[in-house]
Image (tube, rainbow, N blue to C red):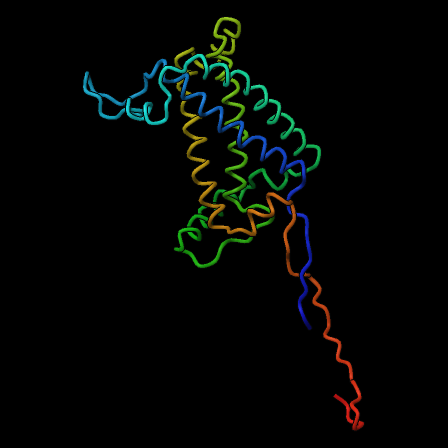
Length: 239
């Protein structure tokens, strides 16, 4: 018996579209958000008048040329938020209608198995727990990013139009708390990006290729038999 390869669809066109639209949009929104944050850099860890930790020192702004570009940052941020919102909305609708939410939403065992996935990635545990299309850690991460996106939209509107959306600002705990939540979610996106890219590198080119093309080459579940043929030679013997 010999094993043969076959091409199998791994990611639908819609899922790939949502993924590759969201990545640059969210990246530019984080960049433009930094241009806005420069105008009122308030978050730091301090005791009394002594600053222990500043998230973004002045050298950081100068290195990335974030200084003095507040209006530009607001223009990009408020324009792209509509693409971010619509892309996220259609993504959620698609996963519900197509039934792909079953592969994404965490199960009861996901939080326990996510720990095992982490141990496997750190090469502490030899074998990874069984998984479907996504493992337990991916289920949790991909669901969390949807919740984070909704949180960014709500808190973003609250600090963008605190008067017009005063009820939304109130639900977020006020303007200052809404801004803290918005800032924390942005840091969460950056952390997700780093972990996601590292995981992509560890998974290898084959996995990355499937996210682009939508297909993967896998072993056929039904191995094909080897067919032997007897060929007569010129002296009458068989080979």
